[in-house]
Picture 1: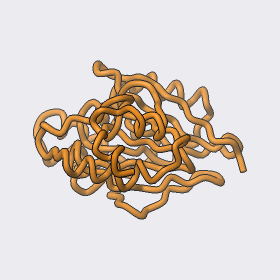
Picture 2: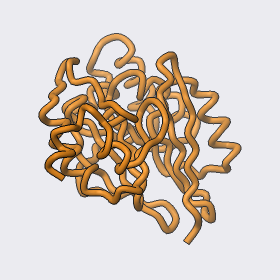
Picture 3: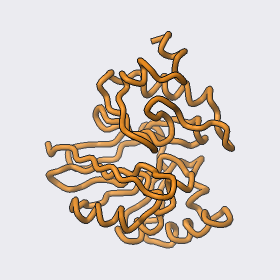
Length: 216
């Protein structure tokens, strides 16, 4: 099995964490959350010799999908997103969403809806799709072995905002309990903003997850 390659890039005005996840042997892999700076993302993909199998969106907020259209156009890769958040790419909304949608839906691959239980293969590895709502109704996370790419679900010492449209703190906490705190303490958590962390570190000290800490 080829080694798992993970490259983090900070992109866009809100310093969103965009990831390239790839099998070192086959060079097959995915781009997760290209939220801006399409050229920076494409240069990193080219430097890694990525054979892009798809572009994955943890959710539909513009700071996570802002460069999706350009990256999809350049790579020819299909974009994957949840049904609930797909309006950001469908062209059915006004403004930036419509412009993103025109880029994504006009390319041959278009975009596909994914949901919990789906798997996305690359080389000898696979990303498992998890439904983790709370920040948005359709937020997704992607689990590869003990590496969780969770968008704006959990950050180092914090959690994603739930006061925006469609947000729900109770749903976010339930998603953490179901999909994060069931992982080993040394499992790595790659968030949508800020540094990577571990499940154990967040279990021990994340103040927003204090009630879960008592139950686990």
